[in-house]
Length: 111
Length: 112
Image 1: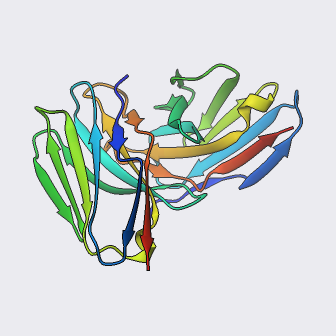
Image 2: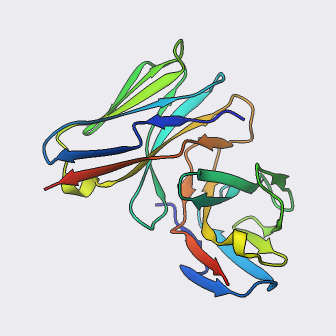
């Protein structure tokens, strides 16, 4: 079975801090995605990557950056956390089949 | 980007009843998928239907796709308390690096 893990289930950070969210998948998938999920807004794509060192902006990239140095790992970086980045962050991966496998999510609170 | 929109947003039913959710989208698609999310957890893939398919079954799930109306429905038959979750539809374009556009979700509560 595909397994996607995220570094933290819950995270509390202060405004202005640099935040790293890590995602690791164990199925050699080429494509990885970061979403944020907010009540009433559904899932919105922040960034995705279709290969090592490759990245593309999603629908809401502002305030975020990503890093993919190894195929299995995709990191989301909040350069200077703000309260409007309080959200549930979901990582997903897929091969060429379109079906996405999700991690358990990280609930980030910025105070 | 295209986006699925589910209707209705919240559904409360008795155990054993059927639950139906609908999803509409705006542009041409390669496939449409349904996902389930239990409270506070990640999404789990349920079923994928391709644009050239009209109906698909998986266990107690039945999905239909009408590309002329740009809509899909998900039917859960003989619902169980464990089916209580949010359900999302997601569409994939023909050219999109495997990107999916998700709807806002449909909350289903199955009362034992």
